[in-house]
Image 1 (cartoon, rainbow, N blue to C red):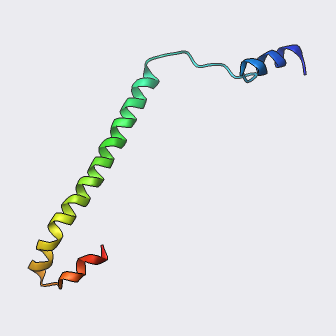
Image 2 (image 1 turned 60 degrees about the vertical axis):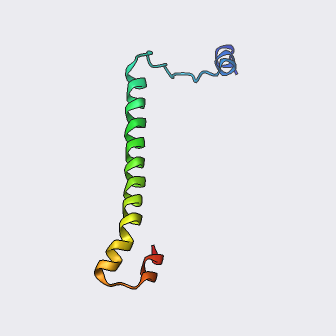
Image 3 (image 1 turned 45 degrees about the vertical axis):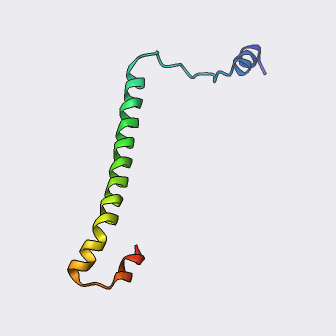
Length: 72
């Protein structure tokens, strides 16, 4: 192993890999992605809550037996 590759390995660097310049764009993009995923998760939970609340009324209105909802 050469001296250069040994010093790169000791410093945790990969030969030939150039570090990207530090900018604010990747950080902003990460927050945008996190917000989007969080909003999508909120919509899933909200949808499940609405279905669970509305299911008994829908069953009564359609004349289904009460045990039909237990399949959900």
